[in-house]
Length: 518
Ligand SMILES: *Cc1c(COP(=O)(O)O)cnc(C)c1O
Image 1 (cartoon, rainbow, N blue to C red):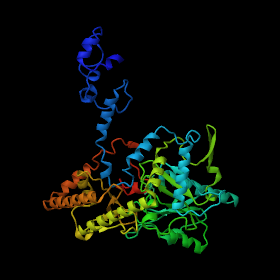
Image 2: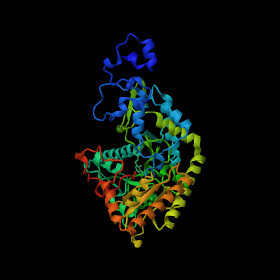
Image 3: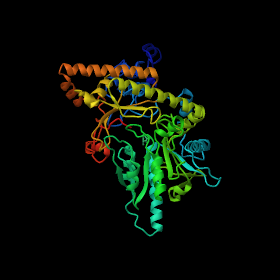
Image 4: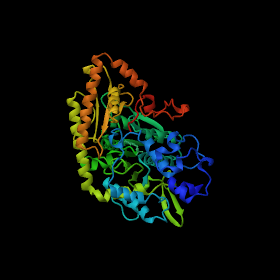
């Protein structure tokens, strides 16, 4: 039947294939469909649901598969209108070309792809220097690696801190069964994962109704003999504020406490050095031993790349490093995965050398300006601003309704209204102990230009007007009830395993509604 699939028209059929059995006699569905039509939507596939649960028995033509999946995906949001995420949604064509060319390269095959491996090392060096790593002689280099994202980077950094602590305790003949780590309760969920996966107790410094960053004094007071390290965040996910790493460092030095600091610079690592070069948060501080950054956030690469660098090999215990002798070459490896694509690392290298420091600086300054412009606009509309301006934090705008104005609706209703216009602006409840504050957050990314910002401001005004009108007509309650019932327009929870649906063990799980803040 394969040759039949190539027959395009009835005329071809009659003239060239006179000897073939009649179409009606073949087990190929109704005549005029499937193989016999040039149009995807005329095929029987278009009349069926896409296979969901089991691999279908038979093939489908590639153009049909392509079109059907592409159409299915149109119900996803538009990445450029997704203001919930820090993750890159724009790269230049040339970067995309390089990345597509590398799709078939497995990054771990160092011997086969030595240039890709070397490109990673160049990126590590550039990023470590951007973070002011102390200079080393040739035999003792700063160490680092690419990862899938900051989550993997943070897992590796946590493992390194834990292992180093365990080794020290063992050498001193002391108990090493109860390691703990100190962090803000507003950490990104991957810190909770790292702690849980690697059996490290979490010691939280809680936010208060008017402080959303770690309190350095409180953090240092939590240290005990079982503390493996302190996490300090360069740009919290909630309000984008930079935690005061220098204050933590200085307290440790002053009190003579030997406790390492890891800086989670997932978002801020590519922002602060360009917008706020005088902020001292990195390896210039002696207690900072490791730093992670997401290449796919303000590093400006599509999702799938992060980085972690250590101040000195001393902080990366040797037992964690595997010398992979794969196809003949030795290369040190410290990752949770084995195989992965090389594209993201190559994309990162493109951005670093294509933009240079000047390019990153121009982009980050523009984003900061746009964020300030939006911050001023939401304040004019009567919102309270929760984020910093003028480059004192990440280029994001976090804001909330002024409780004094006694609105009949909340931030979630505004988010829902904006969603109907295509914008994804998350509403969320602040980290625990901050008085159940609700807020909204717009992340300003490279492709969020001034004109798109103006469009958002217009729609935000419309949304407020719409909700006020509903309030006047006393229809707001039924709208809010309706919204709650249809909370997730995308049916995001559809495929969720009911066994795990009731997750309450994470900070965001417990306090609900932190969705979309990533
Ligand atoms: C995004 C983020 C993470 C997680 O990073 P991924 O690259 O998404 O894995 C960790 N910490 C902070 C502060 C973040 O903003």
